Length: 168
Image 1: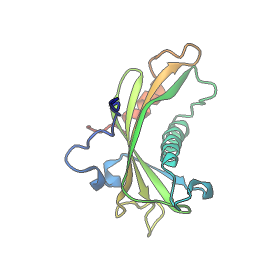
Image 2: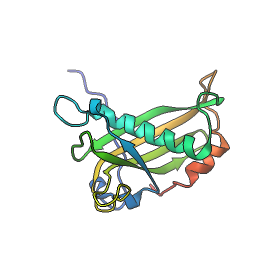
Image 3: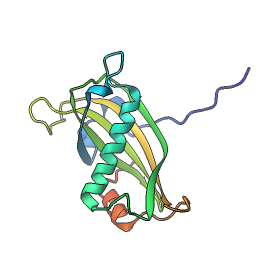
Image 4: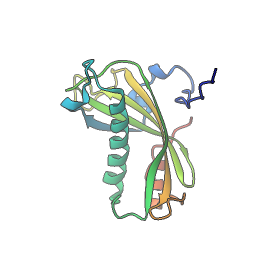
């Protein structure tokens, strides 16, 4: 009988259980919207949608705060690894917040810890009382647009990423 290959999992969280994380554990909180088409036949967000939320939050944060244009940059941040744990269901039309934390910042790669939270009931940007609904792990590797070989990430991006650095 063939063995099942091992699959990378979301790294452990220091000091406790992953589902006890709060928005305070993430230096960056980025609002995202759900869409009608995000719900699947089970009436909740399809698992693949979480990866779209992660991608949207990371790239919107980088583009908005650095002004870089991903269409004209000589380097690209490509996804080399990702994973997600799900703790509770979400559905359209809930407002959400993606928390971003940088757990590793290398020469050409960055590792993110990502949390999905319901937007707070009292204020759209308040997530303090909302439990984490999903925990993601995401690795971007910066490559040359033409050769697709790893290259140092642009300094403007590295500088921004360093503002979200946390201990693993």
